[in-house]
Image (cartoon, rainbow, N blue to C red; front, side):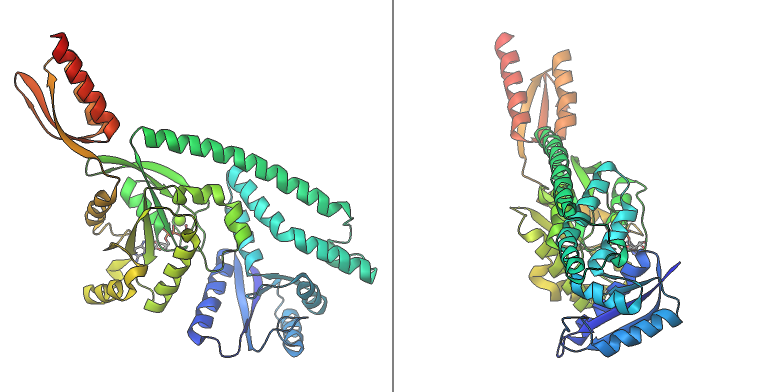
Length: 419
Ligand SMILES: Nc1nc2c(ncn2[C@@H]2O[C@H](COP(=O)(O)OP(=O)(O)OP(=O)(O)O)[C@@H](O)[C@H]2O)c(=O)[nH]1
Ligand SMILES: [Mg+2]
């Protein structure tokens, strides 16, 4: 295992609880990226423009790096190029911030061509302004060789820009294909349902128990990077359920952009199942819900949200109810489940059913014939047949989208007039 030191600067008078959570999350991220954390340094002060933390703290850090044989220094606070340069000059070790750490995790999780492109894009978008800054530092100081970046020439920035453009083109092409696929699914009458929520909330576990799949589940952040879709029967209606990448606080814009085509699975859904880990402290749940809503907010239009209080088996019923109530508008349409134990999935399905786009319910009489029977089997596929009786004709109590009802009606009319 690689060894890392975590560093966090807290603003004076900032929320203590929030600071603790952020450090905890950084620790989890480091763990998910495969680091053993050997030391955590925290300092409360205003930001230092050269080192982020104070000069004395950096010297303490440099000593610890030597003494503890550390591979990497990871800052919670976003670092400027200048700060990375200055700190690594003193520590003689690679220094990264939280965003670069997330990128490292994403790089190891990317398995498909598309997700590899997305990660590369995010990396380049992150690095471009920094590369420019480093080049200007090197020029000013007339010194090559900083962190192996000495070979950069002026054209480097242009090369990066070209590569960014090419990747964007390719991803947009894939996005268009995705849109076409989604539209065709829609027009075939499937409703689209997406699992969304903070990383590690249990989205993939819920996906697995709902559709009997075996998607990878782990007590780590960002286990899922590549979305997966399966069909699911919800009380007679077939929906397409998609498992997606998790959210995290301060997910920067360049990252949302890079993963736009993945996040579109959420943004274009009819219903979003917003999964939360209800076993966490109330304040944590609240913060994670806020982050989730903020991530989706700009993009979501007229989407129904069901809040899934997962890991409910870890709490008492009373505590659970209190939490659902306390979160109020942040948690619309709350349902408590245990994805792991498979508890209350029927209640979730019933709630989901009631939020699916409306279908009409009608009575239709079809001729009792071979053609009529093949129409019936088509209706079974495309809609929900609540009741069917065979007499002189076939009488059906049918629920379906308009297109299906119209087709069945005109079929019935044609046969009636031709007989
Ligand atoms: N106790 C309990 N643990 C659960 C439940 N559902 C999921 N977990 C655990 O929570 C952890 C995360 O589960 P995942 O399904 O990988 O979570 P995710 O939301 O898909 O996470 P990312 O893909 O990393 O964003 C795993 O250790 C699961 O076993 C549950 O209902 N109860
Ligand atoms: Mg997952």
